[in-house]
Length: 162
Image (cartoon, rainbow, N blue to C red):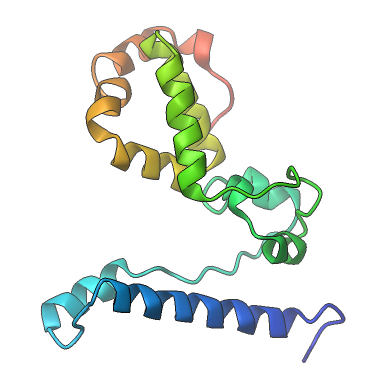
């Protein structure tokens, strides 16, 4: 059954794009999936297809599925968030660079912690990407000693529940 906006066809095309992307990535990295160990790792860590059951503003409020400005035009239209985001597109890499630039601009570790905390509440995938790519630089901010200071200053930095 096809809705008036062609949702079924769109979902099928998105799945096709993800499958093609995954196939291209496996060719690029020359994965030999004949090896059982590599196949087990591939099955465990491969990209998952997610079709959210939320629409519109609820997508942007849910940190687990929000991609910020990385949503494509088709995704924005399909999910009902077209017009809720700026009319520009940024990859996750670009967003990660902007976040790190903002973090490096701050001198106080508590301010850096607050930036990361807000990022985690807004876009979880981007938070973990930034953290993994800059683990040496950010570990003192998300772990001791800054977390101890954040606990002491909790009333000052609290924004919203996670």
